[in-house]
Image (tube, rainbow, N blue to C red; front, side, top):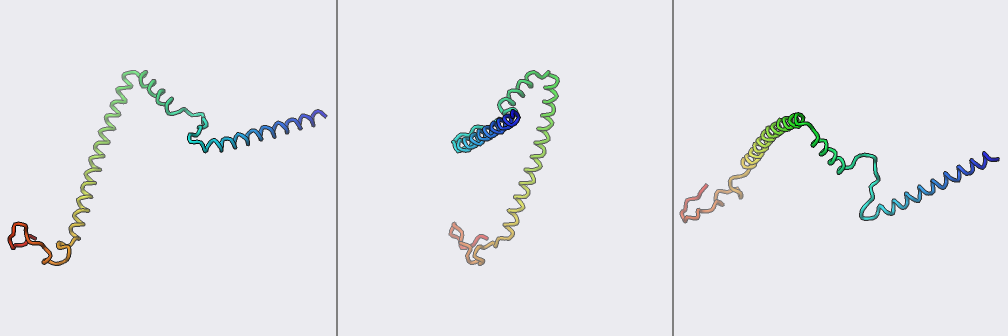
Length: 129
């Protein structure tokens, strides 16, 4: 019957298609070992095209909108600088505290004895403490 022949043909085509896909996957696995991989397109915009698109839109933006964004950028830069100043001041303060703690816990004479303090270079017999 012709419907059986059609079913057989469909199954045969489906098997052939699956075989082609398997062969493609195997060749892709082999080629993935190459130094430079071919990237599969994902339907999204690429970085280069995105940069071009943004550039074109920025060039075509009316001056009022450009000024608006520049004002926003200036405000954000001021906020950033203020936050960095606070952060860096705190960092310096923390470092100073750590150094002070280390110095407080160190023994003034490394070997634990006053006798280990050397005589001054000027030849006098007075030790500098």
